[in-house]
Length: 87
Length: 248
Image 1: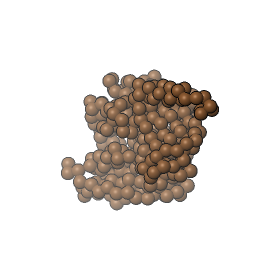
Image 2: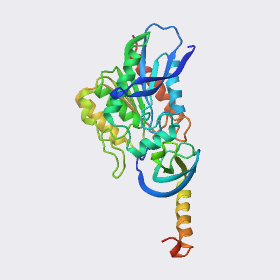
Image 3: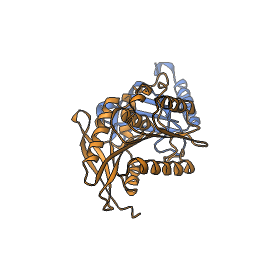
Image 4: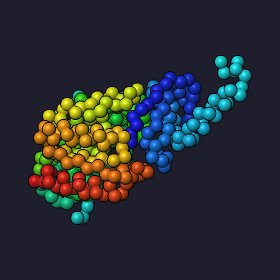
């Protein structure tokens, strides 16, 4: 199935795409068919900067298990540093 | 069947007279009277696998044309980047889709050897758009491959700006072939059954098939969703259907 559901957030940071590093302004997160991963559905994240064109995108397609592990790892990494650093 | 063909990228004047990239495949079979097919790509975009479908129609004797529905937002972008932009923007506006399909149909009708008959086929989001086009334009045969959001609204919270269009069914201009997967959730079998009932009540000719063991995108040969039995039977139904309604 196409789930269609999409979470869209504004972000600040940088990503490295086909043309090198660029500033990131948006991320879309959705569970749907992947373009490349060999799974029926994957958790897909597009890190984007629409102002720099469609190719200003870093894309990942993760199995649900991998995506949950990544989310936990992100939280763990943030929790492991002094709060003042990540305030 | 020799399956000789020519395929090339062209530019057509789409909705609003916008320049729209399109992929054209024409049989090299010497036929002097043939039907045309407008191919509407799936939500992942104007990609290599859908271009292969365009060529498949030409190999079977139809002139086929697929407009790049995401061209305006992402000219020259790779299909996956363009699809990401389209998703973030909420999809393709319905009126623009109709204009682009109309332009593609007109282009095919004007080709040498055209018999003037035009079919449309769409996959995934293109399935809904195939139905939309057939309710908005004068066409000769339409195929809906697992198109959702025709009867039911999109799930809450999704950014797609599409609305149910079952109310247009009274204007359906041609027979409709529907090919669906029993395991699909969008559209689920109850949604396609409801559409079939509406068409029955309106006396609109249609032929729906729902394949057991298949879900969404079962025609996609490069995805794990591919189901060869359903896809092979589905293709045969497409050839039979177009053979009946697009022949001279």
